[in-house]
Length: 297
Image 1 (cartoon, one colour):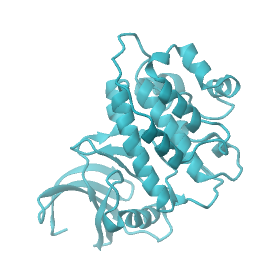
Image 2 (cartoon, rainbow, N blue to C red):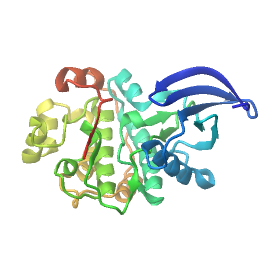
Image 3 (cartoon, rainbow, N blue to C red):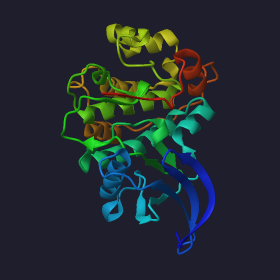
């Protein structure tokens, strides 16, 4: 740590601390995740392995960069780039929802980062607005690879934050992790455009999901009277990403192709009322924070 000056503690975690530091060699601010050295098969070790792999040869501008890591005094230190504007979740929650042009610009950046992760051989498995940071220049960075898995290995466990989780995760059957990432991206886009998730959980215990399963996503959007918040091109894309059958769901490359062929029109801000912002909606309707994570074996 001789190279770094600690500015303040950002957060405490179970096995250590997250620190905002200044790199005395570059004079740039960085985040250092300082955690107790652990066994090679735990979540932190998995995240480090994948983060190293993704950061090789310069990484990708929309994936959080691991600048270096080192072991000192029984603690692992992960030095990562600092994103001064914080979580995308908080930006959306503060605004209530995003205008189409902003939402689509953000979404394109996220998709670019996720495509890079997929092309490097991994599915993220925990995509959410909380796991995207924004740097001082407005560039979005996908973060948190602790649940990531090899993209060609089918999975059975249901992992992630409840309302981002794909419906196939609840079946107990094997599923394609790349398609579950696409579902999560669809939920993220829906929240950015409308300010709310479409349902609490993507299973038949959720009344809204059951309704969508029977009548389609358009039906619930119409009943909520929020058609004006989702332009036709965005609705077409949501339909492709939120297909309940994962075999019919589009791939990350098909999303990129769609975005490249579809210019984003400018949106005039609506003066009409819209439903409460995502944080209060989750608290009042679903009875839990979006921070809650479910993991079932």
